Image (cartoon, rainbow, N blue to C red; front, top):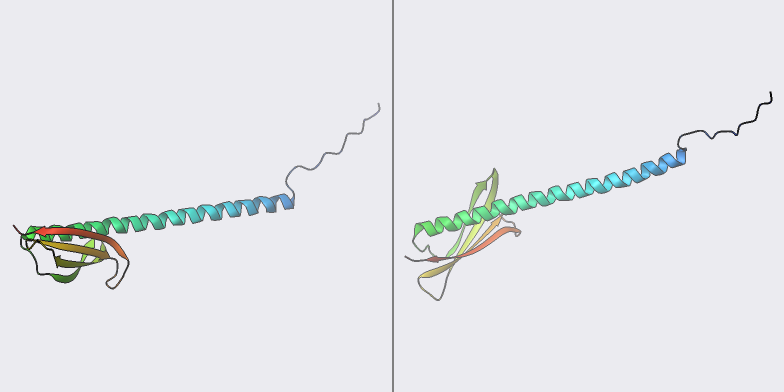
Length: 128
């Protein structure tokens, strides 16, 4: 019996070049995912700070309204903690053409001397 020569089979698997290309593509994809996740975390932290800062401003305006007395015009500063984070606020009270109404602008920042306001709230106080 005569044997027929079978064609040589190529070895199965990947070559070294194919593996290096696959690893390079994977590394680029993972770096892009890591950057996207990092950006999302930064945005979430900024949004949390802005929300808490707006609550600080709302609280300060509510305190001024609860006094039911027009405070003297000028600037006052203070700090308040929300969710374990200390915020610094500055309220600027100014007069209006109506002697029974005062304008209040409250700026909330993360640091005492920071120019980056996380929240700005403008309200009016009415003498009752």
